[in-house]
Image 1 (cartoon, helix red, strand yellow):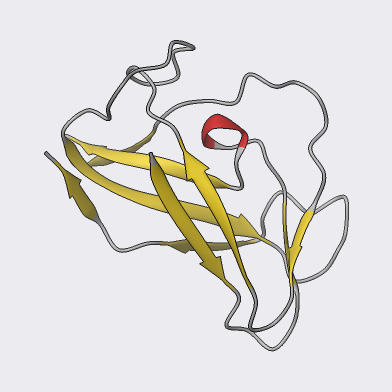
Image 2 (spheres, helix red, strand yellow; image 1 turned 135 degrees about the vertical axis):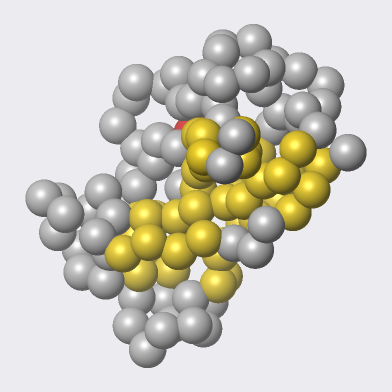
Length: 112
């Protein structure tokens, strides 16, 4: 499992919605042939609540391994490779733009 800490270092609340990788607020991406590919998918079709993170606060997101790109089967481990985590967020609570008008990515990391 990969645990991601989202920390709001801004002076105002940020708002996020799922679904991303395994129905979290973040999207795991794997570098393949120079292109970042999203890994996993959310199979929960129910509406997900908006998550808000106040200034200076943090929230955790947990990513479970899945087989290949977007397949529904779970796996015991992640494929070896170079990864990053991306996050779409908004600085206002607006249903028309909550999909993420701002974007942040983590540093890259390697899974062996």
